[in-house]
Length: 231
Image 1 (cartoon, helix red, strand yellow):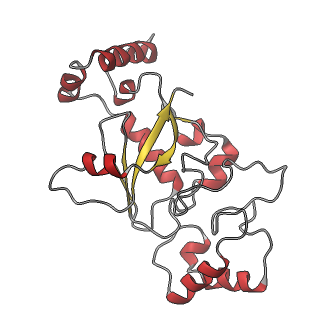
Image 2 (cartoon, one colour):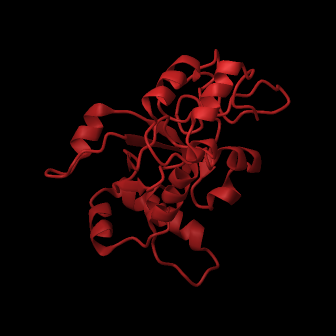
Image 3 (cartoon, helix red, strand yellow):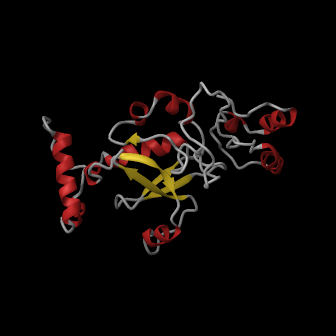
């Protein structure tokens, strides 16, 4: 998979100007003024997504399509461009197409380095903070979602769930299906989703993000709304 449609001398200059961490798609620092100027000038080839993979080979299928309205988010994570439907009941390296996973997991989740990405959703009540000293990658987002849903449902969470018949029914049905024939029948957060266990990308919803912020809690610039579906 090529980073650029065609490597021009100036584009090669941009690549050479990148810190070593960026060359390996693990941003560890903010770009210098020179790097940022070069990125602004050459980082968005027509039809591509800048320093994220750009695919010109029709026989080399890309796991995302078109251009996202969220230009600062990796297109494989953007709800309006991703073609990945990740079943969060399984680990990412097993539940995502091997090609899509290996080619994208190590890339930065956002165009410029960010050490914290906050995830919220209308589909579940938990907030997830994904942190990485060297920058949050695509794979770290997938891993964080999977790990969060494996946690056992707490007493207080069950107490909230029983107040909504629809949620309680979905939890009980999902748990029964998941634990059939198994000794461990404890409820887990994944059961809260019912059949909507497929992660379909990230989106923005400023009003919900503001309402979801716990009073007194600091806001995080990279806050994204998780979209889940049944397929």
